[in-house]
Length: 208
Image (cartoon, rainbow, N blue to C red; front, top):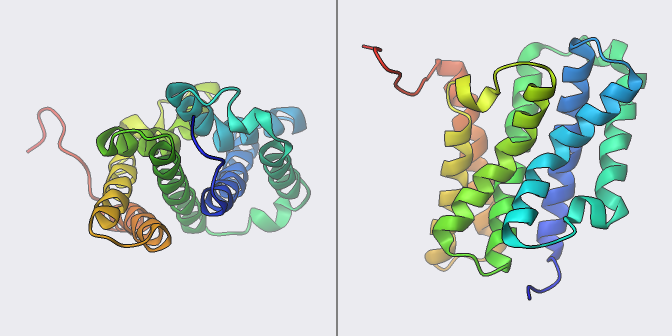
């Protein structure tokens, strides 16, 4: 049985929930969904990755539906986007990408941290951190009838994987959990942003 979630894990998880819910609501509006659809897409974008992680590690019911905080944060973010969309629509596209990269980094380290708290092997914790980061966006894209970003984007899941691995490596080097989490999140965020800026892509079959 794992200990109660740490304050660090809860704070990072809620921050990631808010950021990804904003991104999910923006995608819902771009997909011409109504207010209910916007709420649904915000919820799954923000929380599906964490639900998948919790089911895999045996933390049931998943935290996203066990407590009121996560759904409240997701719906608050969705409502904010709905009410202020005229202002949000003026935000440059690169800002949305940065927002998504921030959510990816937050969830990658939150997933890794929770896996470690449940005594998962470090390698499995890295994989679960990646699943937490990309799971919500994958479900969002499926609901919008799009090829998931994780399967077609330049460097996306790879950034989450690198951030989670950095966090584990920092812990192995003796750094405390907060510093390790910051380093892991920063690596994920920067790798994602720089990869978009520099048009980095993973190799594909037949590519030179």
